[in-house]
View (cartoon, rainbow, N blue to C red):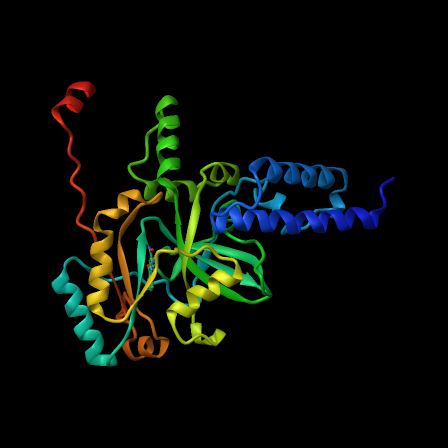
Length: 328
Ligand SMILES: NC(=O)c1cc2c(=O)c3cc(F)ccc3oc2nc1N
């Protein structure tokens, strides 16, 4: 009979190891151990929990994929609305945005972020534990997709601090996973998804979490719901670094820009490089960095006045004659 105390000790140790390995692999994209080691430790924990179900904790790494298929999704009213971004399409628009911002808020600095082409999500944590995840919905009311979001390894089940916080970000399907999924669907005679955003949305709308778990989704978190100032943060760039420290995955390509010329240079630098990314982006988000400047600017009914999204020109899909002949 294994000693109960030793078992509890080993289970705690395996939680710690698997959370560390998982964070390094799925959040930092910097694996600490070979997959074989990760799998062996996960296998050991699953066996221990099967033999001693009393040792299963809700935030155990083995508890990401729930058992039951949901009858439907319940509604979630967002504490603060999840608004959408206004769009700009060219340099003139960008400079006009900057003029309006400086007219109301004076000199500002910006943060530029890649605009991930996925679907907006809200993640709520209480005392550092993942409690609820929701879609944007209509901005005021979203759908509770907690069970599906728990299956995304880049979403921490437990934060590095016991803080109560709402993080907002974008769930997405990497390009490679999208191609593989469509190949599978084609083989099975199913409809293929038009793009990774639809594939991610379709995956998170599954009522069976086992399906979502197989879709290899990921996330990039890009903000804190409510007042960032409540966490002693003065600027958006600080909020992103805080999300990193808490254990969230944020996009490493973000850039602080001193003025709009730097913003434009950053955008131009990504015009052609975006096809090298392992995920799709449809633009660049420009945000005033200082929270007090953001407060001076406020919101319109639909969007923040302290941010906008530059959208890349849609890539025309060129179908050569050869392709047409092949599909005939
Ligand atoms: N898709 C994105 O990569 C992305 C999207 C948004 C938003 O939709 C968004 C909406 C707001 F009302 C305010 C800030 C935001 O910041 C954002 N930042 C991003 N990086």
